[in-house]
Structure formats: C-alpha cells, structure tokens
Length: 300
Image (cartoon, rainbow, N blue to C red; front, side, top):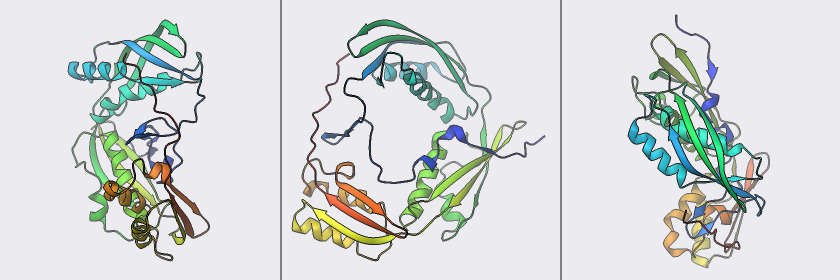
C-alpha cells in the first residue's frame, strides 16, 4: 500500500540552513591564498583517524571503502576538548554520503572507536565501521508548489535526476541550491525550497515535491566601496545600481570574472558585507588583506 504521508526530508540538510548567500564564514578552510577565519578556540585540538576498517556491506563497494578510508585518514576533525565527540557525527555523515548518493535512503552507519594515543592538541583514533545500507530507492515524480515567475519546465531543469534514476540525496541538495540561485538573482534573498518526500515502500520509489517560499523581493538601497581602484569601483557600481533588484549572486560572479585584475586575496568571504532593512539592502565592498597566518598542516 502506497505511503500517503509526506515526511520532511530532514536527513537531506536542505537549503533552509542556507538563508543567506553571503554568510559570515566561521569554518576553517582555504580560499585562494587566504584562509577563512575560524571562531574555534586557538587551543582546540584535532582528531586524526589512523585506522579505518569497514565491515562488508553490499552498499559500499570495495573500491568505495578504500577511497573513503584514504580520505578520512587525510582529514583532521576539529574538537573543542578531549571529551568532544562531535567529530563522530562528521565522520558518520561522510561515510553515509556515498550511500545516499546511490539511492540508499535509509542507510545507517554505526561504528566503534578507540584512542590510540594522545598528543598535545592531537588525538589519534582507530575506527571500525558497520553500515546497513537497506533497500535502494529510485526517483518517482517531481512536483513544485507555489511556483510564480518561472515555468514548470524551468524549475524541473534544476533537478538533474530523471524519473527512475537512483534517488540521490546530494542531487536533491544541488537542486535546492540551483532553485535558490534562480530566485535569488531576482532579489528573493530569503527564498527557500523545502523538499518533501512521499515514499512508496512497496516499489521503493520516492516522489519529490519542492515547496517554494519566495519572501520579500529586495532592491539595492546603498553601496559603499573601499580599497579598490577607480576602474574596479566603476565596474562594481554598474553591477549594483541604487534602486535595482538585488542579485545576490552578482558579487561572487564579479570577483570570479575579474580575479586576474584584483589584488591577491580578494574574495567574497573577506570583502563583502550585506545589510538589509524591510525591502532594501546596503552593500559594502572592502578589500582586506588576510590578517591571520596560514594554518600549518601536518604531513601525517
């Protein structure tokens, strides 16, 4: 019997968490020749997985297990203290990813771990993983609710999966991202695409419905530019004219297209601030030289 109840796709980590295209970045990571600022305590430690073993499961092919083991061994999981176990959730999500990509909607990842040795700000662990992939699901119908401004065909083109394809969680995330980009170019910076799944457990098919919420359309209210040459200022002013609909993708696109002519280290994460009131945004571009030292990475 077909399951008629819609359930929220909480496991997908959808774009409701991405309510702003230009967030204040707080995670460590390299961008060009700069590093994003980390709000973590400078005395925080990392977990390194020296040994990762998989118990056999049909969902994870041998070559995938080898690739995952290699990737995890080259990762550092940031922790706030020796008792912080959040790194386990990160690891679990990383292992679940390839399963979700191959249609294993209900994949479960369990593991046991143990401390091998502790160094100053560095903890080495062994991990043994057991996955239960469960049945493989395929995509059924794709629908959209509340769809002004774009045709059904335009919206459907943002979803790369076709009916009958393996149901890929990463592909659904990507579709949500593309839908948001489509509307955010038209000033709808609070846009969300909330996906819901209708699961038929007999056929292992999932019908996908995107509920679109546009919110307010924003226009450019003010523009301030600091630290750029006159030619660059003129280019930016042409992209963000006062009163025009605010395209929140324009800042990133501008910096990418003009990277060669901009000073090293100029990118959205360190040079763009967007504020807003009821219906307008105030934009500030400011070139900032990275003030934090490069992160020293271990060769282990």
